[in-house]
Each structure stands twice: as structure tokens, then as C-alpha cells.
Amino acid sequence: MASVLGSIDRTVRALGSLYRTTPLPPGQVVGLVLDAALDRLHPAPVQAPGTVRRTVGLGLALAGVGFTAWAVAERRRQTTGTFSLERPEGLVTTGPYAASRHPMYLGWWLIHSGVGIFRGSPWTLATLPAGILVEHFGTLWEEKMLRREFGQSYADYSDRVPRYFDFHCRHS
Image (cartoon, rainbow, N blue to C red; front, top):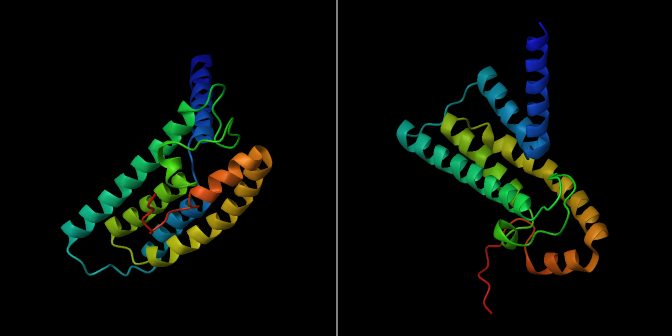
């Protein structure tokens, strides 16, 4: 019995550690759950060839996972102490953070859209923008905290790097 309890304790600790170091934006998590629930309650499949739809959806979702993993890896690489997504040690401006101040959100948006397309759910057209809007307000709060924490360094960073993405080509 003690070994079973020890195993459960180790599993709970491992899951807690994974949760603390995995970026799970609430807007996208809730959006994905709502998308699946709405699709089950009121299915409205997209009329597109299954192979093409699944290939595009899988590609977007994998690109999102890759982009998010790259952002997390860059944050970890820049951390000298205990890694925490909520409390950055320093301002990370390299890797995906050189193109977007919030690359993990971009990754999750790709995951959300990819899963929706893969599943053929038109509900994604409602749940993705709703999740993005929720996260945008969180982003504004995060940026206030980062400005307080990093001062002029963050102000300079936000002047040269777009919040999410920039469609304009920059020329030097």
C-alpha cells in the first residue's frame, strides 16, 4: 500500500511540475474544450476534402507545438535558476522573442486553429477569436508587469518587436 501511495505522490508531483512549466493559456484551453463540446452538441462539419483538411489542420497544430516548444526552450535557455513561466529571471529577446513578444500565444493560436480544422469543426471560427480576445487582456496585464520589472529595457524591446506579429517587411 505504501508503494502505491508513493507512486501516486510521485505522479502528482510530476504532473504539478509539468503544469507549472507548460504554457496553457486559459483562452485557448477553454476554447478547445468549448469547440469540442459545441461540435458534439450541434455538429456542423466543414465540407472540405478530409485528407486536405486533416493535413492542413495537422500542419498548423504541429507548427504551433513547435513554435511554443521553441519559445519555452528559449526561456529555459535564458534561465540560470529555477525555471518558472510566471516569473522570468530576465528579459528574453532572442529566438522567437526577437519576432514576437508573445510567441507562446501565437503557437497556441496555431494549435487551436489546427485542431479545429483537423476535426472539421466550424465552431473554431467562434472559439478561436474569443480565446484570443481573453488572452489579449491578459497580455496587456503581463506587459504592465514586465514594464515594471524591466523598465526601459522592456520599453525599448516593445518599440522594436511587435506584440504578436507584424505583416510589414522591415528594412534597415
